Image (cartoon, rainbow, N blue to C red; front, side, top):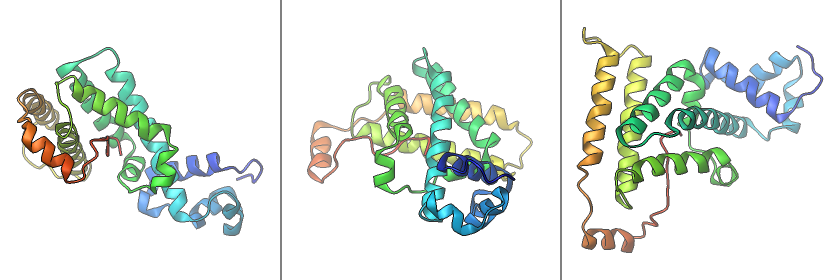
Length: 212
């Protein structure tokens, strides 16, 4: 491959493609250098190390994922929004397994702070859940429920973990319906419990989104 025009953006895009092809764990600077026909050392003028490269892949994938989710959720509310959100999440996870795996890594807070994708993920996720009348600390609890359900289901589906004859799509639809019921009848914190939550040092700020 030609060496001209090597940049951070091209490296990260190539690393994301490699992740989907071979698995996120197989993304390495050596593998990328071979793709571009350069020495490993040439890449260090664009990224500090493998950790930074993988973090940038995580942010790229998170941005792609939330763009798809946002497009599907636009103009919807309540159960329709939840269904659209869940469907877009699952579609991305199954279509881009390596990229999706990248979204699950812990990104350096300094790098994440400058990421529009991270901010947008929190805005869209928490915004959808506020449609159920939730406020902190229930919002963060609900985000964790959605994230663990979506991630667990997609991870099992991707690895062929469902063996029963029941249609996988039908089970997914039922799971999303169950989440809607849980969010609609959420066991909200009392004022006393909420006060104790804040006193214990919880900030109430969006700390995590379902697309990372």
